[in-house]
Amino acid sequence: MKKFILSMMVSMTILSFNSCADSNASQDQNLTANESSQIVMKDFGRTVPVGIDKENGKYRVSFMVSAQPYEIKDTEENATYISMIRQAVKEESPVHIFLKNNTSEIAKVEKATDEDARYFKSIFNKEEKGDAAKLSTVIPDLATLNSLFAQIKSQACGTSTASSPCITFRYPVDGCYARAHKMRQILLNAGYDCEKQFVYGNLRASTGTCCVSWVYHVAILVSFKNASGIVEKRIIDPSLFSSGPVTDAAWRAACTNTSCGSASVSSFANTAGNVYYRSPSGSLLYDNNYVNTNCVLTTFSGLSGCSPSPAPSVGHCGF
Image (cartoon, rainbow, N blue to C red):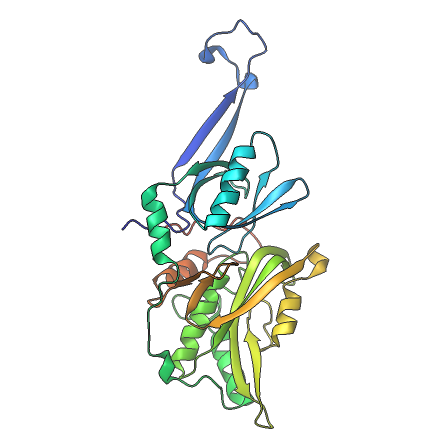
């Protein structure tokens, strides 16, 4: 079946909205460049909106898998599009989205096909069982935890020991879902499993050199025994904390860095480690064969900092 998840196609669609000062002008070819305007749009593809909230005269829209916020202006011209997005969020169904080129602004919304709807319904909550149940869910001590953290951090893009694909900690704009899944794979290879924590809201984080906005963020949540033998939990996320594991409270606080603007957490949830993506309503996606994971990381591997934004297309990374 054709893969549609976040299918950002290369082709460009151009809409021209022509105006003419002279009401007697009858032919478009007679219009000068100053008498016409163009909105160049990129086909974002067929995807599922999972949230829409009004903010400062426009709507912030979130889509399945992507952590980036998108927007659509609250205008009379966009009223039908906004209504379509609201209905799609309610039904968790796909729509066809077009963006203004090189921006995160939604320019057009079209109804998806029945085939699209059937496909998206089929992939949500479709879990594939693996062998992780045989692994330990508790790391024996702090020293082992720190060693595993160092191993994960060494796979960051730009380091001499990074494997292929490397992990894109240097490019936080998007791809947290792929980074978290790759980190879990490293733990599995070392004989341990973990959970993941998803946090949702109007999130803003600082990389130390720039700020990034998210509609959600995810990282691995590990359990370990402290010096007293008591089991504690820590988040591993070198994209925000390069010095070591941190508590989940500290991690969520870093996701709401108000020095980057207004920020808040609406909810958070822990999941099993094999969950690739969790929607705000609790629907789940899986990537047990790491095809999507590795493709996303490879696509972002040469990037760093908070640009480009929006992130490059990962439409070729199908499930």
